[in-house]
Length: 549
Image 1 (cartoon, rainbow, N blue to C red):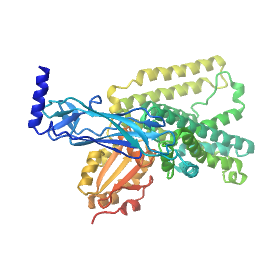
Image 2 (image 1 turned 90 degrees about the vertical axis):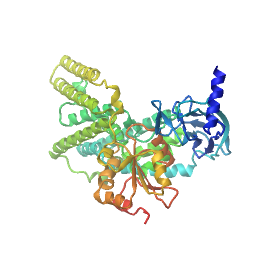
Image 3 (image 1 turned 135 degrees about the horizontal axis):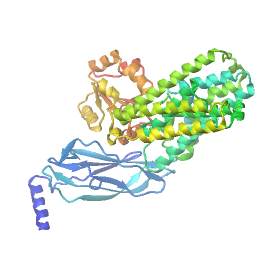
Image 4 (image 1 turned 180 degrees about the horizontal axis):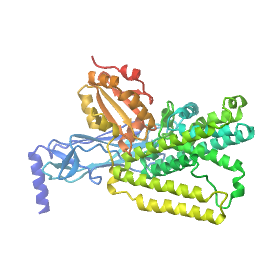
């Protein structure tokens, strides 16, 4: 009976002009990708089931294969997403050692085409050997030195980016308070530098481990993780409350040690460096994106070296102030103004908290965001308890009681409130897509449709947590003159939202040697390759784009 059914199915497919006209998949190898293109016969489709539609590669020494990238399904059959037409699966790979010659790799791929009536042929499996291109070396010494310089300059520029300014302003205030002691200024600058560079090294190690596991990661990837954003929000909130003198960090029973401020000053400088790095990762300064894009494709030692260079660039201004006497003279003298400035910096940190909460809205949704806001209220109350009952004037027993009570409030409210509904992580659409109706959601199929029609396309990869992206959108892309320019020249606008993890966008960033967003591409009808714009845009750049007359 089973044989009869298969025979009948083959006869039906022959009648439909499908079964005996099998189209072999096309396999091509790019610099860091294996492409397998399937042409699905008309009147049939392919399900998204990874057991029936797949592209895998055998482990190979010196090469790391990353997860297969699937295009976006555009159709639905029997209630399940499916593909039609021509579909390409992509298997990205990275070299972990040099290969002066081509290297053979074994791949396996397969499909099971079904007619639109849901009658399906048996699965087809293919095994093939492909040649990966030669790679003379992971990076030459001159290349590494060049990108180290870019990383150093990029880290230096990060100091003036809006995401880093709150912590740096507070650090400058600390240097002013120690300006009377050269030794304290130097130790403070060194402690800050150690905090910055150590944090970048830890971030580099995390990226190396994620790459080894096959994850596609990029600059600012941790801001796609809601727990990380919540923890950072709490830390910044506590930091702001401390600037308003709600509490001072003291260990219970350590009143004598509190009077020795040098240790506290150095630890404060160290953690200022840590906070600066945490806040810097959503920003991509000019030159930094290029340097980190290079770093992400390199072996572990080069990644650590380049990330350390970024850290040195970020800490460089404070090293100069701490060790060059002439630079310290530029700092204002201590005075009552410092208290006012400190409180103003507290409000700047509260603004940072509000911005992080906005990012959470697009990560976890509105209902879950309300839970986080209530949690911050309890955290603030716990900070007040800690500050009220750990003062040097109260007994050690009361200090311990206040500390334990504050911890109970924080842990208890976290267990009560931070239990998100399952739908939370499917959250909200991109904020600018809501406000700007001319922007369409990016998909490779949509882009290719406009390209095939010979129409211009402006593609923006952005994220809600990316302050550089927000600056470009507010000052340039969504300004009246630029919107008018796009409309008059009939330029299609596509937006790729990287607020949450997206393997396809990660691959596009890697292809254009960018470690993270923003990435702006302009596809002109007269050019086969897109024009890559800088991370920081100006209206003049956009208005000078070539348009079809």
